[in-house]
Image (cartoon, rainbow, N blue to C red):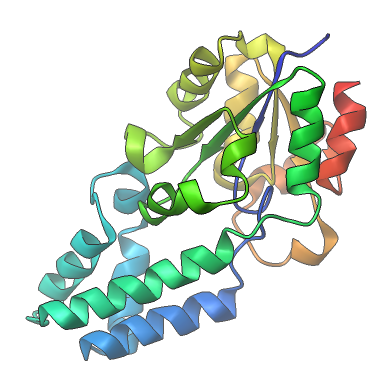
Length: 229
């Protein structure tokens, strides 16, 4: 086989990106649960993104408490718990695989390929991961918040390759181009593939790699079966 492993991104690849309107609605619900101004809470939550995905802020509860402190609010424990649960509910909904995801990964595994995941995420994803239909078909999941590094840091790709027992040159990397992830994959010697699903193209305006990408492009996950062949 030309490749021995396929490493996937999560959001915008194996699952859909969060709809901006739903994301905003959830932030407002969290703010309401804490009795803080919606706009202020949303601003601070977005401002902690890098800390949350890199593990600088370890848990969702820690993030909520941190923002309350920034806003000068002493929220009750029950209010913090309610806000945390609202965030977890969003993540549970978001973790639904795309229609062809599980079938595609199952076919790849049946073909002898090792399957990895590298995702920039906060702690809700690893906490809920075991209940995801994707968990049984992914050999090595790497969550940025758990390992303290995020894409496009070369170390996170190399960590996945090491855990899979393959060289970067033996890996395909599939992602939607957020966080300069394709550039990062190229840098370590992996073979990146951009997935560009038409209905999801407007959801993430930070896909710099997607705008500039000149390499292989697929429009559905099942097309990766042709690429590995």
